[in-house]
Length: 353
Image (tube, rainbow, N blue to C red):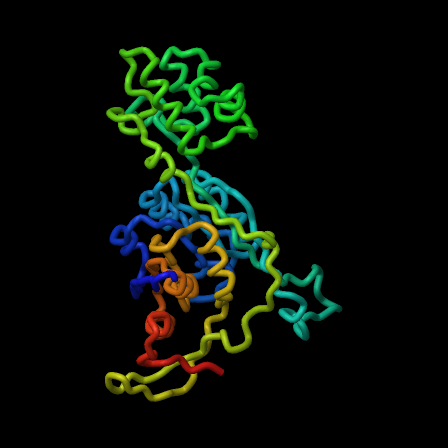
């Protein structure tokens, strides 16, 4: 059984918090959409690239090569931010479409004036880090991993065909791991271990070490495996997610006055967050690319659905929310989640309607 995770919630601007957080396994971004949805959210998508740029720079500084990113937005909002992500070393993998169904716009479409098909979707786009290594051992002249693998073998002075001998195969090593096109394969840890050992044993002595990330020691199988992001495949799940926007019990509207420890007094129900994401989606994406006890970042927390999912799945969530009202609601939700996941009664149970 998975142990419950931990969480940390920061109230305020997350830009002042990133450096205090540990390296993330994945980042779940659900920030500005360019629709004027909250104070500071641009009213159009055009300024979104500049809005996100300092955040993306911070993500890139703190990320490891195995860090992944889930970027929630509208289709056009994502289009404005995508070039900044690519410039910062993030690699596009695929886009997921949340189809909220016709009920999302039912009764809100004027057929005489509308000039488009009604929009009932959002996107959640998955990125990994571009795998780059120093062409010169210990240097900063970074190249893609597939180019680096061949360059290091050439530097050893060994003929390319000897890579097949190193891996104990007929031609798969040169065909898969030295390919420079879309047929390139990331070498599994056990294969990489064989390539590294062979190059350092039979390569030119004066060029050793070969396949070193720090210029001192050859990369180990464990280190190599930790450079690639996790992917836990779930059969039957595609990149189109059909689920109505939240309106039922999961729609978090709780609020209470904390009069004394272990006592709560319901007050007027607070307005719920306009764009709360389904917990099922947050669990899906966190399960897909992380392992128990991994670190999850949620820089634009809102009601902290990703962090709630992280706690329930035994991950460690780090969230921030700049709006004091939503930060308080998120704190109550996370407290209840942590206690219930631990088999305890919530001190201040959320009010649901």
